[in-house]
Structure formats: C-alpha cells, structure tokens
Length: 244
Image (tube, rainbow, N blue to C red; front, side):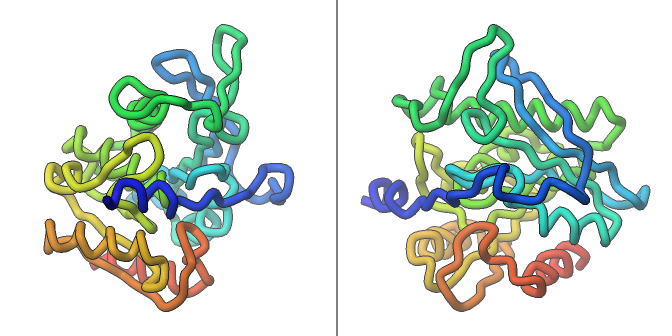
C-alpha cells in the first residue's frame, strides 16, 4: 500500500533556474552520461584540502539551484560541492544526438527505465570527481526527496561511498525508486533529515531507521519537504552530526 502513497506524497518543488539568482556560487560544467544525456552541473572544489565534496541531488520537478543556499553554507565551511540537474530536469534535457528528454514523459519504471538511469548518472558524477583527484571516500552523497532515493540506491552499489544524507526520503517514489533494500545493503553512515508533519516521508524515515538502527535521524516540526527543511540554522545540525 505504501507504494501508491509514496508516489502521491512526492511533491514537485516547482522551481526553475530562471527564477533563481545564478550568481555567487560554483562554476557551470556539463557531464555526459553513459547513454548520451548531457547533465548540467555547478561545481566548486573544496576550499580546504581536508574537506569532503558533496554531490547534491534535487527533488522531483526541481533544479540544481534549489541547493544554492546550502551550497553557499558548505563553501563557507570549506567543503566542495557539485549540484546537477537530474536527467529530464532543468538544463539536463539535451542528448548528444540532438534529442531532448523530459521527466514528465518518463512512462516506464523499474530496471531499465529513465528513472533508474538516474542511479547510474550519480556514478558518472562520482567518476567526474575521481578524475579531479577527489578520493571517493571523501565524497558525500546527498539527496532531497526523490534525490534521496536515488542517493541511497547508488551508494548501496558503491561501498567506496562512506556517507550519505537523505532529506525526506520515501519507501517508494516515482519510477519505482525504493529504499528499504538499499538501506539494508549500504554499510556506510546514513543521516536522515525530515519534518515530523511530512507524513509519508516521516513514516518512511521511521521505517528505514527501524531497519537500520545506526541511522542518525534528525527531525523538526512542521511539514517542510526536501530542501525546504532548511531555515539557516537546522542544516547546521547536519554538519555537526557529520563532524562527530
């Protein structure tokens, strides 16, 4: 029953790149996926040599710019970051062959679908950072909403990823992207952030922590979902939890 609820609970962020000031964050880059989709990204290397780089995956219907305030906080702390538009979102709609893809037109789900290709796209981003001489064990993978589900699924396939942060994950979101098996398989550090009033995401987070009691669960009042959890102060708890 939760599968249906999860898809309904996945709320598009309704952000567009044009509505967000583009200034004062990292450099724009493009990265090609294994099947020829051109991913649009923003990259900034760590300002301190001992700081990790965060890969930031946005929510359904949103764009990489939703991470801008958090990315600026990371930069102040000396971290690096790479935020990218998921395939079919924002500026990641063009293919090497000249075609176009849009997430609203993804009609199939499960293995082999465009949704599941987002998991391998995360691997392409990791490879980009490796090529930049970034040690994989100093990469933090972070996702909001459907981005959280993508994050834990990729991390479960790559034991070199030691830390993931999941904001408002679901047991199942669009495209058949589930989390229980991935949480069982992943052996690294997991931090979940969620609002207590965000019913499906909160229920899902409790279920995931019940499966894996080592998960650090950080909650707050209200119904905020994904990056809307950030208020300028609460996200500092995430950085503090990772520092311990």
